[in-house]
Image (cartoon, rainbow, N blue to C red):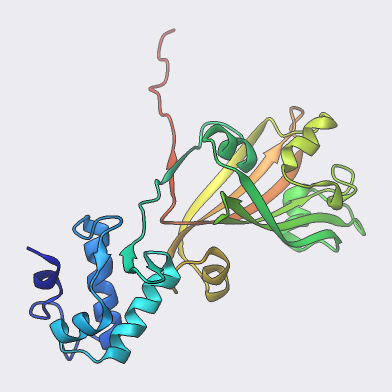
Length: 254
């Protein structure tokens, strides 16, 4: 099968299948996901796709624009449109308590950050409960978009007691690095992972298509003495991460 046969409308284009541009976009997405439309493969010009599918140029242009917005197709001036180079998924261990900055450095990627909010605020009931905050006490919050080589990877919201992080502006890159300097880095954590559909705002920040799949991780980090000092809620893009945990049989000796 060649690209022309793959785009022929029989079998995938129908009057009951929803908006025509969405059907075309999904057809191209399926070809990219299956590997039929390989990375760096040129995509036929809009006029050729319109001729092959019987769709209007406007419909084809809208489908291609969606794919360009997702980063699945690249448009090169004077050369046309191409399937974007494959981006490897990242494996992150659930068995080790490491920071985003450390994980990216281990893979040879440059960690970056775009700040959304940071400062001292009145705590929410969830923050009071998770961190054991006293009456009238504030909470330190850090909200940021985490980047790997400039690519948005996760939205992270961290909350800490003010005696643990009295100056949120002191955090430039790695929160754990700052905490470690004061001997206050968490040594264990409890995490809860949920599969979600990203909100419109989250999709915009992470530069993924509307209603894309994501992972929500809530972590509470503890010091050696058992005190909870970190509540972090993170939203990860589902197309970039695999979370891996090592499992062992319990030792039944004795």
